[in-house]
Image 1 (cartoon, one colour):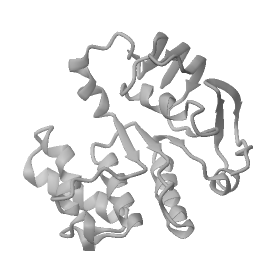
Image 2 (cartoon, helix red, strand yellow):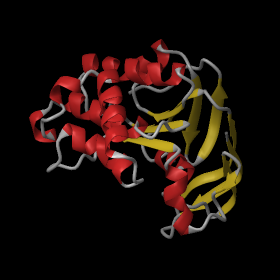
Image 3 (tube, helix red, strand yellow):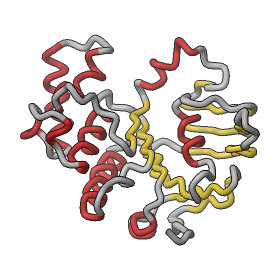
Length: 228
């Protein structure tokens, strides 16, 4: 599903955030991206959904070469990729329902189809009863669940989660992981950058560790491997 070949990413300030990444990720995998702050984790995941472009090398996502993909085609690429952010990035003036529906409205789905799909995903994340509330009326965990609902509304093949439990208390973090696990069990690839040692060591998946822009470890059912 994802193939990185000799990927190098060098920023204008001279920092090399990716130093010859070579990675193969199959459909349906759940992968943790771990490493110290500033190691290159965010660069890794941003390159997968073309928020960043590599300096050299090749990235293939579902057979599409992101290094040569025209900017005008990026929105179409992202319809198959759901992104969950640490800070939620919800639209503050829209209700829960409207925040989730927005992604379908821009792709011109029928109103009836939008309503049915939104209700389905809100049920999945346990927020159907709060669909008329604004983000400011929700807890952090509830806002993250809205973010996850929005990320899966288009039935993407892949979810990219950038520190999705980073701003949450431990109990809520486990709730979010339960939802991501369910999404993965339904066949969706999940790539999650995280500093949460307990989650990585408890819910075992493939671990890719990055240090100073280099992949130093790639293990099935790996450990976190760092002190928080």
